[in-house]
Image (cartoon, rainbow, N blue to C red; front, top):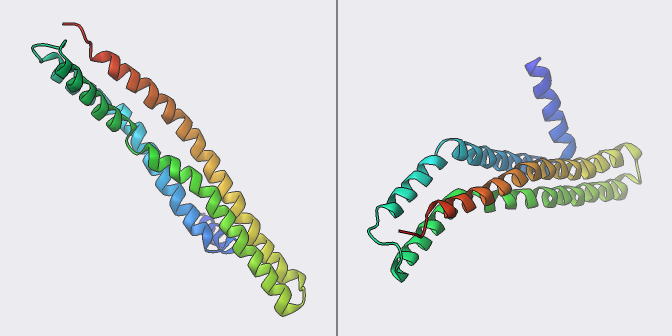
Length: 172
């Protein structure tokens, strides 16, 4: 069973060309980072908020201009840690369809090459068309799956950043 699945994946990757390996690598990186962010919110996030709150609440005074600057620094650092690898995840989501288009171009080059060398042999052209369409489909599917994770994480980051900022009260 495992061997059959492995062979099916290898056959699919060969049909789509070398670009599929790049799409697979980007997708793996993207989902690894998405799961890392989810893990962060389930484990480390509470410690981050507690540590920042403790740092802020331990200040003797919190009304001066310099105290406000310290608060802004704590908020900025916390927001950066909450967002984490979101820019990289968003870049991966954007790269997947672009690599799919690259696969389309390389597949069409194979079609034109087959037409030039074999005079329009339908079998050789079909392999090129397959190599042109599979990466496009794969890049779009990978990107759409990443959009689901990214949308969830963006909302979570915005919500948690607002809560984090509200946690650091200004009154004394």
